[in-house]
Image (cartoon, rainbow, N blue to C red; front, side):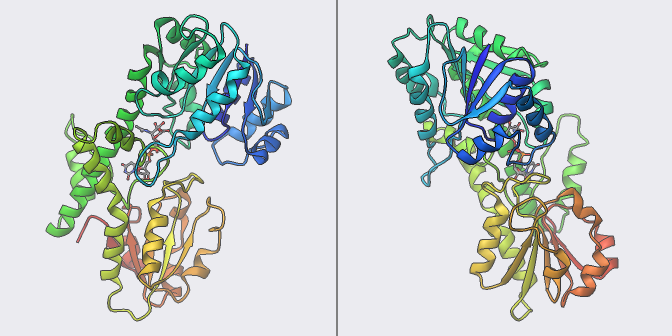
Length: 413
Ligand code: SAJ
């Protein structure tokens, strides 16, 4: 089978590579020349576990190549971004453009699959009219549907294979065609559904996580007022066989959980009140942490702050919607001198010990694994006022205090 994957980002590229590894001929299409050129050299410009080796292998076999424009194929997979506008509405322009771009190449018997996370109704109301311009009857001559990705950055290749998947079609035949296409590498179950259910399913999964995290963040605020340690509280609550409260933190970032719930709110704002509130609670966290920092350094003249971690979560290079970047912007706006370090994010790789020298507060924003080996004793000695705010319950209070830090924890007074 020849498969054309439109969009070579965090989802499109791994998916294209898995199809190629399974023996299909795959053309990866992207408008970004840098991505296409790198791909044709067997290289990648994003960080994802084991992806570089896989891409190198499938490009070397000739099964995957990059192109700036689509080509005729048996199946087309659209995996382009669906960002959010300032007004918290889904920006569907990349999906529209990808769909328009493939119309001239569509042939009878082709399958078109939308993978990009999209508001419910996108396939039926947005894609179908565009693809119908091919002259093919959608559902009988052209199969169409939505099969959302569910993979977690950092473990994308493992989860592509092992997670279950939903194949949502505009009709049963389309859903079956979609399921058949993914079966070459998906070892999890593939469940058939209609396209609209598949679309909302993806949004509802990420919204579940957003609401759960909002609950944890709200508990953190309650605990800070009442002298309870929220991390101990949640850990004890989670001993209950039917309770699984997520972790609080400085906010929810990334291109999925911080965005997708808004797609539900957008389509039914009057009803989606809990979903809306959860988003607001999670979005309030950078400001909440900035206020806590202001209290911690209130007695220091011209405080110097070093932030550890700027990505949206640990051990990835992605800074999209990162709450830490927002926190840093707020701290700078408050007039503090702020430096930031991150081992993965471009432009933040400097020396932590150098940045902390003469500083007053270290803020652990992202719990990257490699921060475990930080020499806290050395850091404390280098600083003017060794204070540490841990937003992730990453360090042990006792260890930090022994090293000479005054330790502050998000979710505890
Ligand atoms: N976070 C918390 N507390 C937690 C868990 C996460 O504050 O207990 C924060 C993280 O620090 C991060 C944000 O939430 O800023 C999102 O991180 P994540 O690890 O929860 O999720 P993503 O965005 O990397 O991936 C999610 C996953 N969805 C679910 O787990 C329901 C993944 O399976 C989806 O495929 C992905 O979104 C996507 O592409 O939609």
